[in-house]
Length: 169
Image (cartoon, helix red, strand yellow):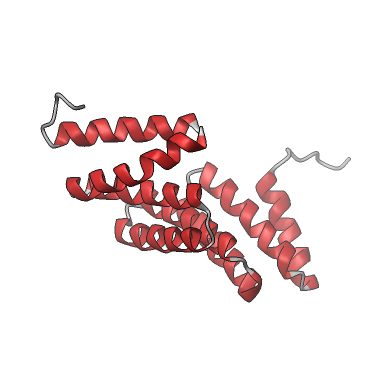
């Protein structure tokens, strides 16, 4: 009798990737890499996730929209933060923010700016972080995404405490 395998999104996507790659279906190859990047990220395998994100972007080539490229950059930036590559993450977040802003994706640009502000906070660049947070607070509030508004409030309080402004925090 054949052995029954446990379901695995990663394994299924890897198998699909092999078949799709052989068939030359670049769009589906990109989608498989996106899924594998997500699986690797969820498993804490950030270097592997970065490889899949790079391969996703390569598979899409010039067909990738500015939004998709920005999304890939943003995701790679998050992976680089997890790997303590803060300079690489900052470059990716700045690029993603610029792309998002160029196409009017205000919330996504604000999320990239939030990540930039967080890196500035962690680097002790408090004034820069405070300015970044001030610029995006209204966008988060208008978006009605409570998790973003709350995360920003917590980080802003941490920032103010670091700056010694305990009355404002």
